[in-house]
Image (cartoon, rainbow, N blue to C red):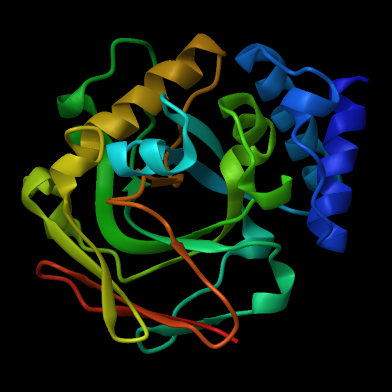
Length: 260
């Protein structure tokens, strides 16, 4: 099977909401390089169909997420505009019927004011390139049956991208030490996640730096205007129709996400 053929299977699963068996089993996918080739082919397919890339997402940056899914290094994917749901007065309804097996994560989003080009990107370069930071809720979703994934499966599956929303952009937040930012995620009033920014790759800015360096190896530059989701503060929380999530973050307005 070619990357384009596997991408078509993922697209069909995305559209029809019918999961497929792990690619690591069905076609013996083992190489991250091959998995990213499938992801890239899927991205090109979505662009041809009229979608647009708003930026990038980084997955598996917290130890809690790696332990939860049984994979042990970060990955990345694209943020597709058709699954961006803007907040209205701090609230958003995620249409539950577009997902297969959704889970919600609390994250920080970065808005780049300048490009991140070249290799050896570190915290200071990310800080200089960041225009603003916001609280984000990402829905991860898997086209793979029962989340039975290995790293190559989630890579091919666009890093298990489902959807996202972002709170108001805060220029001052970009200059704070994000390692100390606290976040609490509640589902239907019960606390599910309590974490701090240092749980994200040691520092969310280092997570963005990791992605910039990874993309540089592929000849890809992160550009001004890109949105970057830096990764979940803690484990992901399963979501079903009717669930309401509230994300409270130090010094930031709450985000409320309802699956309806």
